[in-house]
Image (tube, rainbow, N blue to C red; front, side):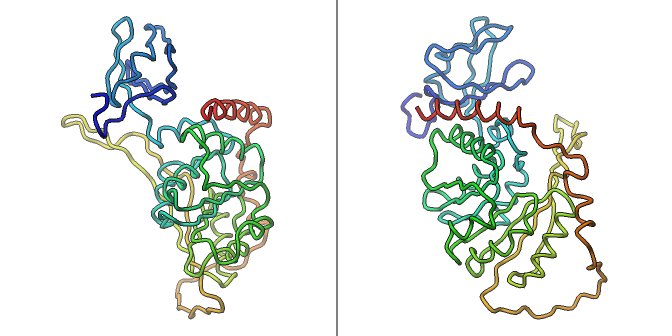
Length: 325
């Protein structure tokens, strides 16, 4: 089947996801003369090289493995992390509800570990641009290395700028030129005004936040700004199912809350929305202390240690350099 048009063949340098005995998963990178060693024997890389994607290969003891090229989701879930990643269920919602399209100019802040950047780059395509911003140099290094490892090269249509978004965005993005802005950060409400300047009229802002307090504060800031449509907020949950013969039931575990999403559209300059009536009462009086009580650091979410962060930076940047060479 080697050489058949449309058939994906394993080559030196490819990443391979191996499913072995008991359904255990391992991901390797193919090298000439390389070997994947286990207590059940060694699987030679040369046995995989030249085989079509989706082949079954065996080691010297006859133990079989299913060899597949990893999907982007597989890579994202196993990538080295500095900051927490945006999980696939939320990334899918961001791409669809954020209407990320080929050729779009998209602002992203922050880059975290590069998971969402990978999805956004695929969505905008070669004709689009992804303009990412990150406050921490170490997170930016990890994200760029992860994306390079996944693609095999650094995308030419991707820039990563270090600094606070509200300060550096006007220096990088001209007024009213961005189609979309995706904010995955601790305090997106601080950046609403800067993003409003960068977005085109009709452009879309989509925010990903972890707590209800962050959600409330961001929505209030968007409303008070006056340059956006009313924000729409939601969360998504994914429940898998066990399907085997007549044993069909929901899985005992599910991917529940990972974060909230909200969207708002940029209005044209000097546009004033009509006052739509809302009979439901709401609490609009609050203080900074009300919000700070439930910020992530206040409820015990521990940041990554500096030692672990430095170790991750060294690991992924080394892999990225080897991948590009």
